[in-house]
Image 1: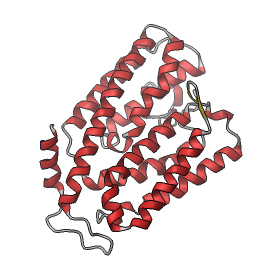
Image 2: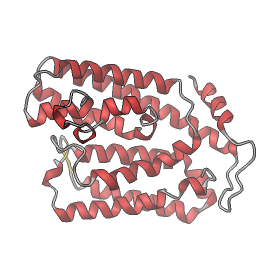
Image 3: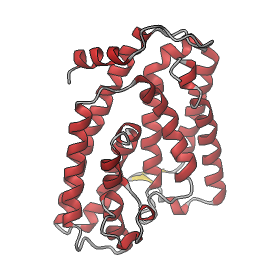
Image 4: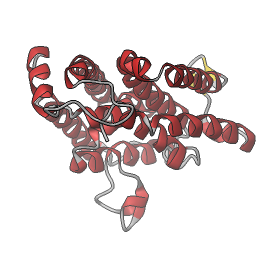
Length: 274
């Protein structure tokens, strides 16, 4: 779908009347441009995800464990950046991004697939043995995800709400290190989540500032704090492995993320999209 088609599709989803909440000074037409721009951002991330997944799965199938391990985290970042949209397709999200805990027999469950199944083989066993079918399925799933999202009209409330969802997920399930438990590349995921959240806020910034300039400045400052904390752990190759962080490091990161998530949870209401 081209930009014109995206704009028209968004218009069809918007309410006929402007929102009436106390904070809702935004008209439906005001939402069209940022939603369409976000669709382009999502498609760009998907293009990078498909290309990265192809290189990653090729390395897995070739038995090149060292290269596959290097490609794992940067490839996943593109998925993490658009996760609220990807999760609209629950079948693909489960196949691409489920964890062992989501399956009855854990790592031994035949249904355990996707990035984390490959992560388990590469990092827990330092082996790509038996992973070729999993790699082929992951590549097919990522390609199908791109196809479905290309044809998808993004609901404005899902887009705006995604800014909070990304940060809430970090706060609720990722600070513990459970996401990338074999590779400990969680900080790469955090970066993808933060970047995806900030992209949404940046695109809607003029509308947010118009409605509540003090809130807009506060959110911007809180993003800067999260960025500063994350940058402490940047290395020449990306990010420090997460299991090297101390309990205090994790508490500081959790505090910054929680503060930002709480603010972003009010964003839909401020734009009249609840």
